[in-house]
Image 1 (spheres, rainbow, N blue to C red):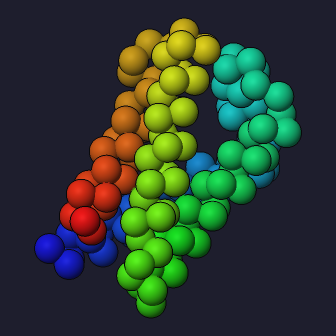
Image 2 (cartoon, rainbow, N blue to C red; image 1 turned 135 degrees about the horizontal axis):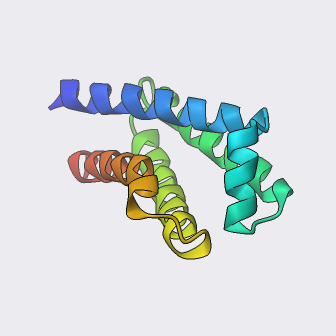
Length: 115
């Protein structure tokens, strides 16, 4: 079970690092999506900071295991918000929310396994 936790931690850390990076760099695709969500641009930066906080929590959990549950809950909440933004604010097709759903499921996996 410990190997599963490590694998999921690393996958989530990579995925959220990428996600935060494209937000911080204001990549055109991300800016376009953010405009479709109808959120202000400063909120994109704030979400990127929260994602990076989650990544730091995931990595810190290798030395401080109690951090894992907090990081996983934070990331799960962010992905619930991302799914909402895709489906209800931007009216995207469900296919557009697949990455967020996968990241949510991985976060929930950590929450369940850690408890």
